[in-house]
Image (cartoon, rainbow, N blue to C red; front, side, top):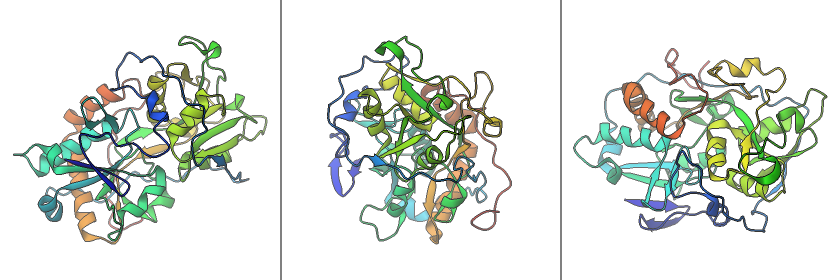
Length: 363
């Protein structure tokens, strides 16, 4: 198997690391485990491509979402079957698509779903040998790599990607395969592994620096958030979410804010950090898909989907087969992967697809 980082190709014996993330990934354990590892000392330099983000008077947390896709098809995609599957992932996302340097392979919730897909396409072969993983930027920054003429083109993107109406103008989405919501990760008081959150919730972060990755819905939601007293947050954008984790531990920002499934992984990497515990104001509409077993701290609705190129018949064929794979592995692969990688994530189980769409964007 070959893994690709940007335009540089590496054999699978070398861990793929993004330039500017080498120091940050010192925080990452060799595997995601229930017992958190001891944190490494973070480097002193500020991660690259960090800047203040522009604020807006328009509320950005009420993002229009997409949960339905084209109908599933049991016909394996012909082009992919011949050449293999190329998938865009985030190698630092400890819950979704983590690069395990010890095992020299990608692991995580999304990876388990992709491997199950490959098993359906090539049932008599080792599915991992048919998959090439390529590192892609976070959020909508990855969409260029779906274009046919891109030198590092991928067949689809399997990062922790929110399916929004604005993004549906640019790409096709699979059915929603995971419900989540945006919340925040903060330092623990006292700097130990047992201290309470330095900030209890979003409303305590008014006037504070809150970090998210560029070209993500998370950054837009931070820019649009207002506390109960009407205070703005101070949005800080970095090239990658894990840059934000480094800055949080160094005291350069006060919180990292993105989807809870990502932040769960960050908290395992750095046990001197913790998720906020206090629900934000007026967040009931965003907790519809929360299981209610713990306080809902979500202030956005974040359905997750795989992204495919628009205007490409082969991509549509693959998308429909992916929807088939998601549905056919619902009771087996999805449940097992969720228990392994997202234990404690407060969703209500695998989403049921809504009525299939016949045109795109839906609605």
